[in-house]
Amino acid sequence: MPDEKPPILDIRGLRKTFGATEVLHGIDLAVQAQELVFVIGPSGSGKSTLLRCCNRLEEPSAGSIRVDGADIMARSTDINAMRRQIGMVFQSFNLYPHLTALRNVTLALAKVLGKPRAEAERIGLAALDRVGLADKAKAYPSELSGGQQQRVAIARALALEPKIMLFDEPTSALDPELVGSVLAVMRDLKRGGMTMLVVSHEMRFARDAADRVIFMDHGRIVEEGPPQRMFSAPSQARTLAFIAELTR
Amino acid sequence: MSRFLDTFFNGPVFERYLPAILHGMVVTIEIAVVVVITGILLGLVLAVVRAFRVLAINALIVVFVDVLRALPPLVLILLVYFGLPNVGVNVPSFAVLWLVLSLVLAAFAEEIFWAGILSIPKGQWEAARSTGLTFLATLVHVVLPQAVRLAVPPLTNRTIAITKNAALGTVIGVSEILNQATAAQSFSGNATPLMMGAIAYLILFVPVVALGRFLETRFAWRRA
Image 1 (cartoon, helix red, strand yellow):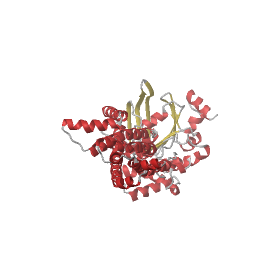
Image 2: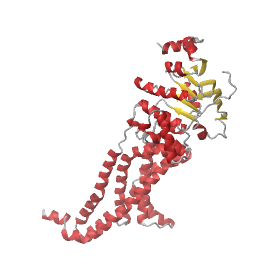
Image 3: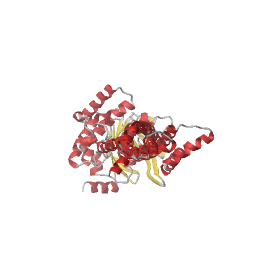
Image 4: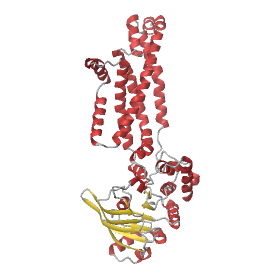
């Protein structure tokens, strides 16, 4: 991608070992501002680990990761300040069950950014409104459907105005009829210019919305390219086999 | 039958010793309240410290908790009350009872809170940390509110069991219910004061047991 601007996310030579097993064998990946990069690959290929290294939920073993130019591995980096610039959405939502939807969104605004209550609630309601759930502000997670819970989780990350959002299989835990509402919110984010790195199997969404698709296998990036080419004419046999398996 | 009534429900004896028993109730309530406050707070603090997983500190906490849970409270009470004066430390009997029961309750409470903390899914920690919350902020605002709810039913039962041990204060002369009742029994040669003591315990603890039952249902947690 010819771009003189520095990438929002710049991963170089990333390695991750669990015990004696290396699960990421040197990943290089740059995500440009406003780009939506889609990561696919068989389970165990290391795609979730890659994502979780980007905000150091997993501690990288080697390599460098820069977010908007800042080295997140540097000792001088305040990882908590860094993390609020990197939104993360989990497969299992991970909403706080003892707090209302609005309080789920405002907790970090109040406790990390130190926003006064009224301002935190204003920002929180705006974030809930963006995911179409302003009317559920007072609902507890147990009173929401899976799709609504995931949208609250997106609002929770969004409220902190992150520079990039990481999505770790955001629709995998959802019933099929609830997937669409979450993907619609993600499409809307993309239109709004959010930079996104998405691990998912939603091929149709990737085709419509992704700028680039990355295929990972056994801890390596096997191939990458625009979605049309990746899905119709991948150059690697492993990619072809995986995509054939998915669209079967 | 009249002999039975005369022994356990003797009117004149009842009237004579009622003030003493009432005084004992006040003392028992005082002990129970201070033990519950300090014991549960100390237990919570220990569980929070343990959450930081500093190996040496956690080893100390585990030793403290296991020793306090293994020893009969009476042994500790006697040890502290009759042992400390030998090294020149004189602690009033009320304070000894408070100290020992608080430590015992703290030991059990720590284990209950710790179990609660451990049962909160890892995803809760990860979600909170991913928004920039520190470890401590995550513990305080996300994990503990859930862990404490889980802890309420077992903690209520354990608290009742330990505050009843206020009766052990009788052996070191704390003027709580049982102490008053046994003294009155030996002066009067009649079992009525003991019966009064038993009734006094029921009056105090049946509402607490009922409250515990209420809390158990109130805090039964709907998980998402």
